[in-house]
Image (tube, rainbow, N blue to C red; front, side, top):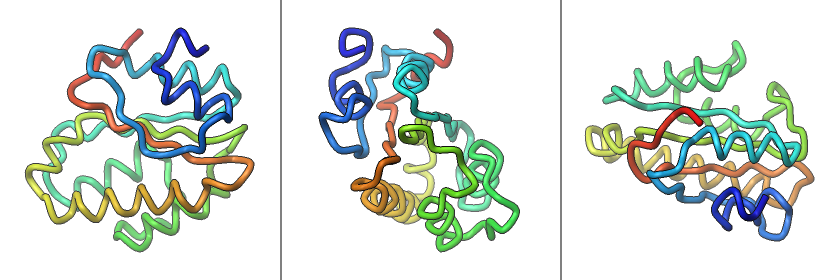
Length: 147
């Protein structure tokens, strides 16, 4: 697997590096990251933020893409709670979240984006020393969605 995906992700998936928030090259397909996670026994999902420009749209996109539980209250605390109580999300050996097209939201709502970055980093840290870590890939810019 180390030859098929960038080394930072391969090292997380094989357990030689703790999960973290990782960059993903724009020229690589998001499907490659998700397939590598699946092959390593991890579950994976993609959060595409294309067109998201405000908090309400971001929360809606999270609820839909991540299939958040009914108790998700569409606010920052609820998002943090969902990402640290992943009982609603099958774990496998770990969980991978691939975030795409985030730059538009970050530019449109920089204060909100700062909160999102903190929530993601805290969630990764929360799961880091468990048997089912959480890794987040931040795609550097518009990546190909397909294979």
